[in-house]
Image 1 (spheres, helix red, strand yellow):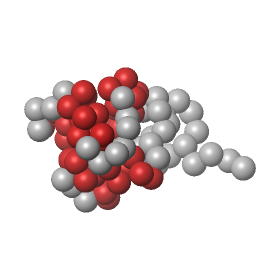
Image 2 (cartoon, helix red, strand yellow; image 1 turned 45 degrees about the vertical axis):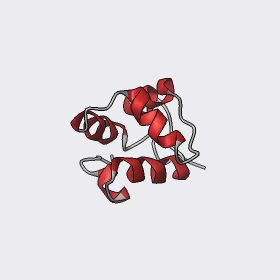
Image 3 (cartoon, helix red, strand yellow; image 1 turned 60 degrees about the horizontal axis):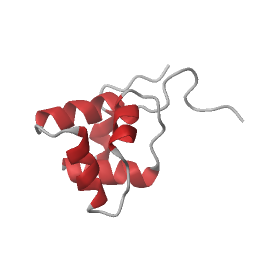
Image 4 (cartoon, helix red, strand yellow; image 1 turned 90 degrees about the vertical axis):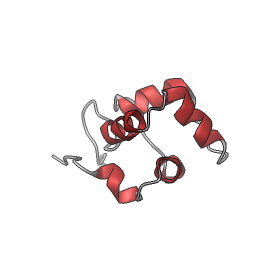
Length: 83
């Protein structure tokens, strides 16, 4: 079965997550801590890899990211390019 995302990039939301986090003045650790408050455990290093598109994002993590960043889930895909 073919993967939806081929190549080096493993997610479509990393750049937008980074942008929203920086707009809020949060560190990667702060974002990790906020996710932990929802019982979604993503360490700071994993946040970095998500933002660099080196790590996949689960549906639960995607939900948590949208919730803590206070944006609609669809907006995390803004500007994402599908080739």
